[in-house]
Image (cartoon, rainbow, N blue to C red; front, top):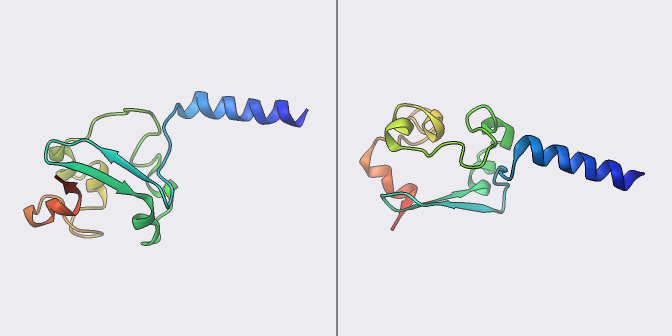
Length: 104
């Protein structure tokens, strides 16, 4: 009976969240971007005291391809720009910071 319950929980999770998940400490996610690939490292953010629920689902929905990020939106305080605004973390709209995320 426990096996059936476990599979039902996993199925419910998959239906609710789809195939997307947060990037836990020790894992990375790479995103293609016009200015160079962006690698999100869960450890960098965890080392700063952040936990997955701080961003998921408050800032980022837990859906695969929930929306492509655009620098204009990030610089306007959406997505990564919620924290990377020059207050909580480095400002994305400052050209000197581009290479902190974008790698050729």
